[in-house]
Image (tube, rainbow, N blue to C red; front, side, top):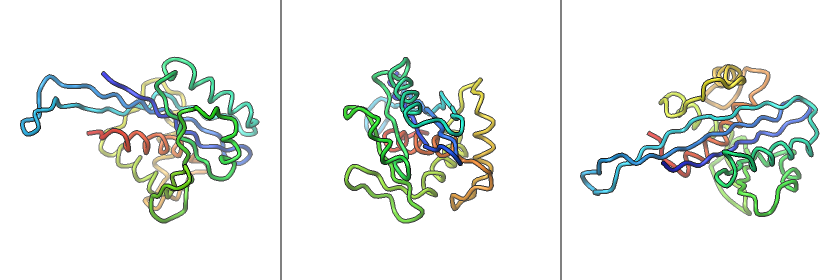
Length: 191
């Protein structure tokens, strides 16, 4: 089995919470081959392994320490990619990360197409949330049992409409999961 973890980071401080969501993409090779290509058939499963919402007002240096602690601890160490919302406070927040960090920087836009320039992915909010909704609908994404913030994530997901607007007071867990899921799907093709 081959696996990689994507840590989605949605930054907030006073109005919105900072939220972390880690999705593990685990690929297994089945014992049978594709009849056309003769390659072994692989299956990728996406599983949310961590959900964490930090208290409002948490200082950015503390947030950076928490993220770095997560990324350097098992099972994340040497097999995780951080996917961070670099919009708003995210841009200066990037200074807290080592240059060698496995980091994907995303600028969330209100509309348009997915583009890449100057080291940043520009992704519409609706595209991020739509991708997450499809994974949930197709049951390609599961949530590990026992995660305390899982009910809050499900509540946030149910309050988001197809345009990416939310009826919930907070959607930070959903956005963190959407960032992680976007990168996981980009690299792996779940069933």
